[in-house]
Image (cartoon, rainbow, N blue to C red; front, top):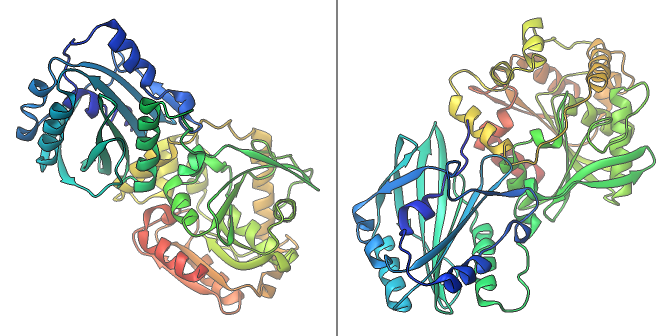
Amino acid sequence: MRFVGMVALAAAALAASGCGGGPSTAARLHDDLLTVSDLPAGWSAVPTTGPTAPKLTTSAPCLSGASAITKSWKHEVASFVQGSSIPTFVEVLAAGPNADRAWQRLAVAVASCRSATLDFAGTKVRSSVRPISFPKVGGSSSATAWSFTLGGVRIGFDLVLFHTGGIGGYVAYSDLGSPGKATVKAFAQAAVTKVEKKGSTPPVPDTVSVASTPVQTANTTLGPVGYRSIGSGPPLVLVGGYGVTMEDWDRRFVDALAAHHRVVLLDNAGIGATAPLPGLTVDAMANQTSALIDALGLKRVDVLGWSMGGMIAQALAVLHPAQVSRLVLCASFPGDGRTVRPARSAIDALESGSQAKVMSELFPADQRSAQNTYLAAVSSWPRAAAVPAGVLAAQRRAVDLWWAGTDPAGARTAGISAPTLVADGSRDPLDPAVNSRTLVRLIRGAQLALYPDAAHAFLFQEPAFLARLESFLG
């Protein structure tokens, strides 16, 4: 499901096609627009004119006079997308006669909106509109929040109108759910700063989302390890599962955690910039994760492992207990030989290379909206290289050793002393719920959280889990 150009609304709904002003006006407006180099890593420009431009129209009584207000103005438009789908960002700049008065009238018109019909290439959706409190940018500004559902996915965008230096402008930033105010403010302030030419325009910071945070490489005692880091506070290391890259994490989940933690994501051995390890085992991957913690000077960390990453997290807690403060095991397995293995059909679906089959293992069939939202969220990442076939084969062997109870650290899971939260979806075809109950019996004092209408990707579906996780981490 693709959402490219979702809020080209700013260009289509409000900007008139008037041709007031001369070439010099157009040139100035064009030069004052933000460019890709002003935005975080991973953003690219989206065409705003021509056959490949996003096709979107809107209709609402509140906007009926918008074109008339600015029909003699000259407009320039730029639009951008992070990754391949969403978030999107649109900027429109305009200049013309009676700038102050006209822009005030436009702001009043938009502020009066309470609903609008959006047409995405023939698909019509109803959007609610409401004024929002927003920090002032430029000489004057106002903002509205728009919200609608498309393909079962809830989308919101903030539309910020501003006027400064004889130029009217507006920016629209869209995202899943509701855009973060701090993020929208950063984009709007960058747009105004460039128009006002108050020194060099500082790029919008990469830290607005983990998906725009560049990959770094740590030189560890077990070779280079690729990782991303975002946020501040107690360190929290996220360890992915079988065939998972950093770009398979739902960035909404990571960004939410980064509000209170320094979150570190890593690629396991042989993936991305991380060095391969000979004779790959779960214990070897745990040792490499430990080496990253040392290289980053993190000392004691909270660790969350997902699926095979939960095995790695257990091994880390067994082999390097001084490094683990709290342990969160998501859709994970015991390593004492009592694992109930998934059905062969579930493993085949996971390894099929078919997005539809993989999603059927991650989300229940009746959770299509959650699935589509996850796909939109991961589309924000820069494209990652495929996991090498040899690495996948080595990971399968490592998992088999763990399931069989012959992994040395797996056989010692009962010795874990770190406070532990075990969680999964009760409808997980890849990891029967009995495995979570076994882990809770093995690890003294472990807590259990099962979510009834969720599967292997429950952590990206259930807001209740995020709340439980934040409470557990303290």
